Image 1: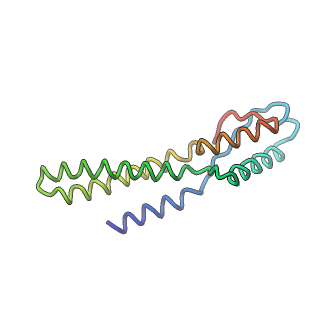
Image 2: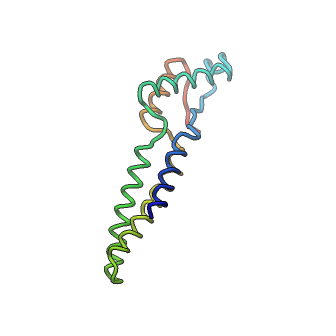
Image 3: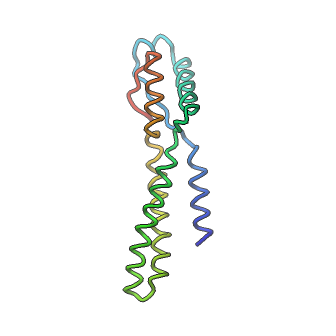
Amino acid sequence: MKRAACALAALAWLSSGCLAPRPILYPNATSNANGDERAERDMDECAALAEQANASASPGGEVAGRTAEDAAAGGAAGAAGGAVLGSPGAGAAAGAAAGAAHGLVHALFHAHRSPAPAYRRFVERCLADRGYEVVGWE
């Protein structure tokens, strides 16, 4: 059980910094005049400014919260099922492990679809101040 929890924690930590989402720019006058190379540099600078302001791209807190929430729900459901079958402790442990695994995997798959809200707003405002229009994230 401890090994599984450690493996899940390591997976969460390793995946939290990978594949940072990037803004998609609308091809307006600024982006057309500056070109792709300058736009990429501006996006990198805005992302760095966001990180310096403690607006992290990775919604790690959301991943941890979702995992804890699902572990608690799984533990409660497992204890109830275990009580019916005569082993509430084992049921609670199995339910908590299953709930945590579900919460972690769900959060990891959804975490990289959009950056953390504060980071997204920071980068979008920074790019808007430079004349760009952000239409989405990838």
